[in-house]
Amino acid sequence: MKFFDKKKIQDIVFLGFSLARANFKLRTEGKFLGVLWYLLDPLLMFLILFFVFRKNLGSTIEYFPLYLIWGLIIFNFFSFATTQAVKAVSGNGPFIKSMKITSESLVLAVLLQTAFSHFFELLIFALFLITFKIFALSMVFYLPVFLLFFIFILGTSFILATLGVYITDLSNVWAIISRILFFATPIFYIVPNKILFLANPLVVFLEISRNLVIYHHFPEPIFIFLAFIYAIIAFVVGLFLFEKFKTKFAENI
Amino acid sequence: MIIQNDDKKRIVVENIGKKFDLGKQKKDGLLGSLFGILNRKVEKKEFWALKNVTLDFENGKILGIVGRNGSGKSTLLRLLAGIYLPDEGKLEINGQVLYLAGFSRGLMPKLTMRENIYLICSLLGLNNKEIKERFDEIVDFSELRDYLDTQVFKFSSGMTSRLSFSATIFSITHRQPEIILIDEALEAGADLTFRNKATSKIEELLAGGANIVIVSHNLEFIKKYCHKAVWMDKGVVKKTGDPEEVINAYIKNAI
Image (cartoon, rainbow over the protein chains, first blue to last red):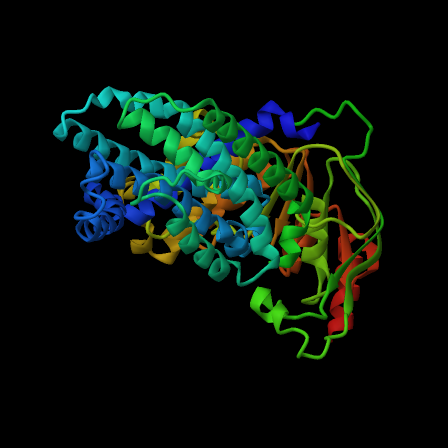
């Protein structure tokens, strides 16, 4: 199978990194302070939600500011990456037509670029943990969750990038779905004890990581199981769709 | 230099055709399709950009393609590059392919020259280590060492084309692909001194033993360097053979 050609995967990953680095530099204008732009949006969201819900939820949720900010970090990673993934292929028409470029790299680049800013947010979060006198090294427990989450987002991005070629207004549709997901995910409220919530993959990834990082609780096995399932399903379906349609991309954009 | 130890043809093109759907010109999107019932159906229109194209590619030879705009030259090249898939016929590619359409593709004006060199080379399939190896050669050839950390949008157009030419040509020589497809990209667009340098670099590349297919409106270039030429018109091959003859026929038809 061509899928597991080692050299090919290396090439895809390397090109993905190069493109992500170039785009990251473009966005930060090559200046260190440019990174702040990445942090401004989550920070603003945090402040608004914090002051609105401080009275009600602040007293019931332990470490409410941390709870809230972690929710935003996890949600933003997913939301930024997927929003851009919709345009990853369809927005690069001239590129795909005039260079023999592996289109997987374009999708990967979007995700890697978002991952860069995700890491900056994680660094800031570590500082928050220290201010709240919480053992900040618990951040390392996030690593395995991050890997699964990354695979899940990558799969979702492949699906969206493929659909984005055929559905021209997908970015509008996805903006609405993202907004719904934002409120369907317990970012600023307590996780309701309902099975239905587990159908939202973001709840699973958020709960596992938040419990590990802030509360040092080991997640329930069902959560871990679901995280694996979601990651694998998204990745397999995404890659399958993408590989099936990628030879048709050039003439449809 | 590529050693030719096999007599397997690197490029086989037999009766290939490529069609595009023109009917639904602008896709409606999801919202549009929901209201699509109200619209009357647009009839499906097909357009064959290429039809029944059979070409004989000899290994290690240079083939030039001429023809009017819209005659299917670029479509043919994209088929060979694997960017499009043919709708009919037999297409076989054996070997590494490099496709070039315009030297300044992939250049990002807001990045510095150094960053752009890394970007162009990685787009052309070099990895980090290989780029580092070639980096000095590229910079020296472009004669732009003083501007390594300048953003490219501040460059003059001559400097820009020197930069992209150098990065591209050294990436090609490094990778040594068996098949090189060039779509209107052999203009260095710089001053005379650089152009001479560039020309000798291009000649080196042409003599390298790769299968080269060139689409160009520069008829003199095709006459001078190609072993064989093809004249295409409206998606079919009009004439093929000796460059001199083919081009004369093409010119006669144009007048």
